[in-house]
Image (cartoon, rainbow, N blue to C red):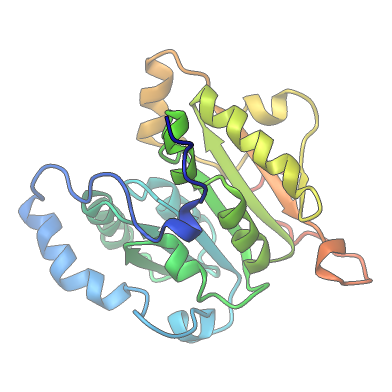
Length: 253
């Protein structure tokens, strides 16, 4: 038997999984055709708040936003911030467009496709928050390189977060949980785990809404784990101290 080939999503350069599920409803299809082109992340060039929103603003980036519930919740909670979401599953993009349309969210930009391609075009140190919530666990060992929680994506996330910025990760899959914590232990120079006892990972923090996926996981008897990591300053070469910018939805944690 041959050994599994090394790599991670930054080197595989392809997307795995379904690109579309059931046919879109007429209203969803109309939003894909009309609203998405208006709020889509530009296909080329730097991804900045000034370019996306015509103003400076704290930037948030969600990798794989599902149906867009969390992205819309955060965007509504923080209307002066800019939100970027990337999702390869068309039905998820359509769901997010419904939220944007119904809630009239002017501070959201979407990308239907590879999140890492867009993330790479964000200037270093430009993001205040990055979210990776319930990513595909790819539980088989031979598929571990497909997991977003790997060294390449984490190094990219670290580069794009500003000092004191926050990376939020959530999962209900025990295999993915163990893998993710193992990988994060290799990045303690870039990330500080914001933890104060078991409740920190067992209870959903303030400003972190429950999605349909999470409710479904709990109904199936799954535990759900929540993690917050702060981008450290030392690895960025900044001799000064950084104070994390308060997030009004962070619950003071």
